[in-house]
Every structure is written in structure tokens, then in C-alpha cells.
Image 1 (cartoon, rainbow, N blue to C red):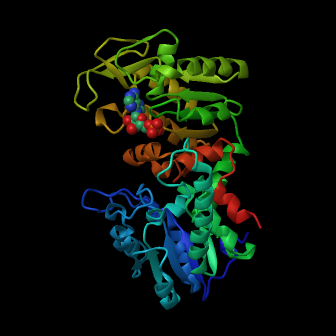
Image 2 (cartoon, rainbow, N blue to C red):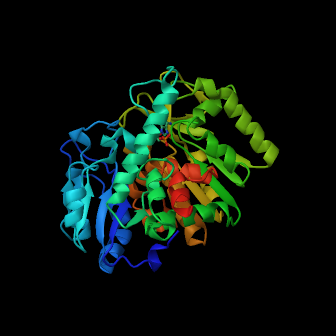
Image 3 (cartoon, rainbow, N blue to C red):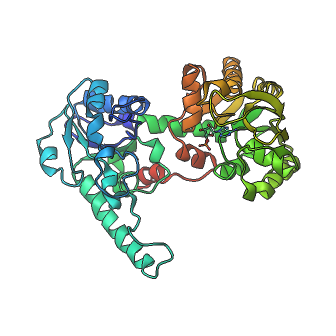
Length: 417
Ligand code: AMP
């Protein structure tokens, strides 16, 4: 694998997998350009060296079909503005030979959404896993995926993967394409390098106490990482919607709060494992409950395990916020994924804000703090605290899988000779 800092892109055509899956409003205008800005160091280095750029990305889930709603043409101007140079656009990513041939050093070409082709994801279309022909269809699609990746590779002299957000997927543009480049002509971009280093800090260079804060709506989507962290952390804070699955599992009354009834045993198992491993498991004891799922519902503070019918827990209560902050403040390694309440509603941000502020304080006192996953990133952005933590990851699923200890296909593909 080459290193981007050591590579001279002069006169080379570089195909770069970026994550330009940015949110758009109903008029197709970009509402948050964080992901575009995240790729800039890599893109600017290539242009400054005298290389040319072929940018490829997915947007949304068009499921292998052309869908103007997910067209990357909508973000062309934003990319041009961010780069400070004109950006050409090719409306079919698998038919870009002409545009590529005309590309001169310093020029930029943006390919249309890779996921307009089912080959990008490599999943057979129109057939269920249970259907008899599924295995054959899968094999055929894998062959088509290789051809698609080879086509993309044929545009360029060098491949750079800077899309951490999709690094946990073995897609044509994130992994398979790397097979068609020599080891010295494929590499991670700056953003990917930073993300991989941040994960290493959390997994390999742990300064104690290590506190992980896992929030969000459900236990089921976070269980892999919770189990993995149990072997590493000193404090494990579980908050957000999963609070009520734990409260119910222990015999509590949770009113109309969000709950996963099929995960009650799992919750008890997590409590047991934490005890066995000597992990300080901190769950919310009180909450701010609302009488409807809306910002302006009536609210009251009550115990998380004694919520009346007609009410639902929507944020961490004052005692809980205090307990969370007390565990976080003296920590030296901190990982935060998932909000402590329905932070999208301004009246239910206090729990997430208390966590964010305690993390900022710990960071000032020398802790390494990593905030990752779309919603916790939205939280720190909302509170204006993104610059006051050590690292804000652009990856949701990719970050969680990396921290679970899984090898990310997008990283492995360029590392392998
Ligand atoms: P996740 O995608 O699992 O990380 O969950 C993030 C979502 O969890 C956010 O949209 C929050 O609004 C939501 N959330 C957090 N706390 C609660 C809660 N107590 N009840 C319902 N949703 C919640």
C-alpha cells in the first residue's frame, strides 16, 4: 500500500472513492456539507501535485436503479465551490471513457451515483435469499461486480479510498476495485488515515479510566459493540431509548416509552456480564417524560422505572445527567455513540448536552474523546462543541464495526498487496 503523503500525483489520473452521501432538502439543496469538506485535504493534495480527479460516490439508496432524486448532479456546484474549481459531470459512471480521456491535470470529474448500478453493491436483484436460484444469481452478480469495478479502475492510474462511511462494505468502488491496481498505486486518503488512527487510539492505546457512552433508540443495533466494549471499558453508560428496555427487563413500569420486548433477556444478560467483568454499568435512573412524541408536549421528571401510562421517557432526568457527567469527567479515553434523548426536539436535549459538556471538560483535562455515528455528531454540531472534542468520526456503521474489532473491507482492500 502506498501512502498519500509520499505519493506524487503529477500527471496522474486519480480515481477517488469519496463519501458524498450528503443530506439534501426537498429542492435538492445540500443541507450539510460536512462530508464534502471532509474529503478536501485528499482532493486538494492531488490537484496541487498536478494530478486530475475522478470522483465517485453513492448517494442514498436507489437500489440499483437510476433515480434523479439521488443524482449527484445536485451536488456538483457544492463540490466545485468547496474545491474552488470547475467540476465536470458524467451522467453514467460506467460510460465515462470519453470524459476521462479529455481530463487534463488540475481538472475534476464527478461520476454519477455508483448505486444506480446494482453491481456497485453486488447483491442479486429481484430474488430472495430463500429462492432456489439465489446462489447462482449471487455468483453471477459477483462476476458482474468484478467487471464493473474493472471498468471504474480503467479510468485511472491510481486509486484512493477516502470514504470511511462505507469502508465496512465490500462494494465495487470501496474494495473490489483495489484488485485492479498495483500495491504502489492504491492507498487510503487523509480522512481514512485519520479515522483509522482514531479507532486505534480507542482500541490499542487506552488510557484509563475508559468510558463508553452508547445511546440512540435501540439495543439491537448496538449489541455487537456493547459486547465488545465490555472487555475494554471501565464505565459503560447506556442511555437514550434503550434505557426503557433495561428498565422493563428489571420489572420497571415504562408507560409508553420505546421498548424492544424481544430484547429483555438480552438486557438482563448485559447487566450480568457487566457485573462479571467488573464494568461499572450506568443506566438512567430518572427521565424527562412527555405525554406525546413531540417537542411541545407536556413534560415531567419521573423515575425511569415508574413512568405512568400515556407518558414516555424522552430524555435523561437531572439525577441521571449528574451520574453520567460524574463518570465522564475524570475519564481519559471516551467513546460516544448515540444521543441520550430525542435531541432533535429542543426540549429534550439536556441529557445529550450534559454528556457533550462533560466530554469537552474531560478533553480539556487531557482525555482522548471520539464522537461517532450520525446522531451524536449532529448533537455536538447542534451544541457547537464539535471542535472541543478530540475527534469527530464521519462513520456510523463503519466506526462501530471497526470498534467491534472487525477488519473493514475498504481498508483491507488497499492494504493487501
Ligand atoms: P440510533 O439511530 O439508534 O443511534 O438512534 C438515534 C435516535 O434515537 C435519535 O433520532 C433519537 O431521537 C432517538 N432517541 C433517543 N432517545 C430516545 C427515546 N427516549 N425515545 C425515542 N427515541 C429516542
